[in-house]
Length: 170
Image 1 (cartoon, rainbow, N blue to C red):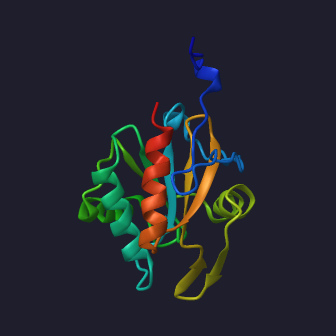
Image 2 (image 1 turned 180 degrees about the vertical axis):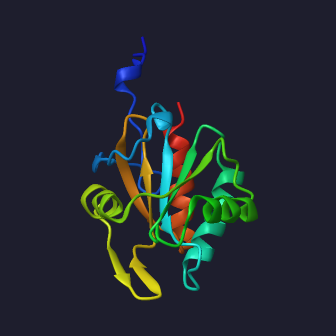
């Protein structure tokens, strides 16, 4: 007689390593009540970036297209002074962002630092006309746990992110 797995016994597996996805830490609170119960991916960009941000944003657009609608996307601007709500809305439109699924978040600088450095444990530093920030993407499960970090500009890492995000869809 075979044993049946109960839902509580199901384990989410890392796509790349067939091990359980770790619960690294709790995702920081930034007023994301609309994300409860759904997995989401966070990235950190600014609209005037001439470095990696355009590629990372294009990769988020691809994830929006390729992942199930249950996976939400959140792009935090690391330059809230220049990235006004209108600028972010225009940027999202250019990327084909579905506002029901992909949010662009602008936080005051001190709160942004707390979210990035204290919450996501990622680098952030003002740098004149450029902002030094992480190119990592974070995968968060529907219960608010960070389950992994992925290089937002590396194809292999993005494939793992996509597979891991699919494993979190209930």
